[in-house]
Length: 103
Image (cartoon, rainbow, N blue to C red):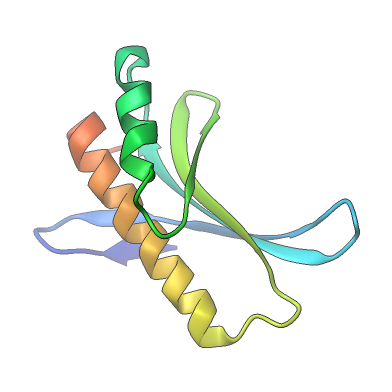
């Protein structure tokens, strides 16, 4: 999915159902931010310290902000809130560490 943001920016988000090791159903929300340079990784991790949700992961040559939550009893409005937070955090990190919206 692609979300339109202010200033002609947009943010991609991938949403996927996954099973936990306990076989419960979870939803994974991941938004790419591009490649963060090695010398900025610690700054990126510190930036996530005060965010409501989201973790930093690397898949291939891109970093993503990601959150996984159980969906069995997840109210739709809570899902939307988590999705909004991931989109906002990913866009903020992309602007700071990558500098463009083309990642």
